[in-house]
Image (cartoon, rainbow, N blue to C red; front, side, top):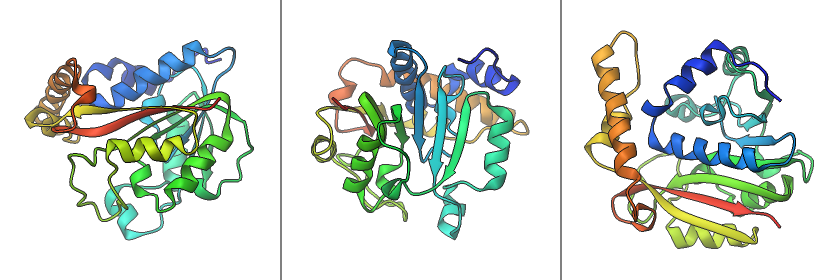
Length: 245
């Protein structure tokens, strides 16, 4: 397993309390699942690009993402290119491989990963049932699929690249057609502090960056209140874990 973190990984882990609550929720779940795995753990990050939520996780990470080719991808910061791949590889110690590819037509071997993670990706996929079926295929028996997507019970779809926003029951039904065990909950309360936390950080704008970090801290506290997982109104994401028997 990993024996040494890069300087970038150490810095990012130190900043973790100030990062967006959705990423922290995904990371917390990933770390817990990796620790419960027996032996060497392999993660497939679908659509992960820079895969920030797997930084420092004690596992071997493979990232599969579409090549960045269109103007929409450029404007929305989607997909990967050679420059992104080289930059991430230089910063990270746990990335095994980058694959330029479409998960709905994956050539990855079956039963090859302990965990698959996909953060805010499924809403971009036209063939969603095929996507989920492929995720199940590449998971080992007992493997888990951890994913997030916008909360269609509350968030109106105005993104030009989003095919749909799922309501909680719709997502549960979709995942249940491929997986034997499915849990879906609401996550991340909206409001002023969430908006502050979504600001991009910049060393040239320290006060702007500080306000973003504070926004994330407050929003994380708000989003950890009991009952948020069952609150459709006011929450911005669905968080799901599906298990393969």
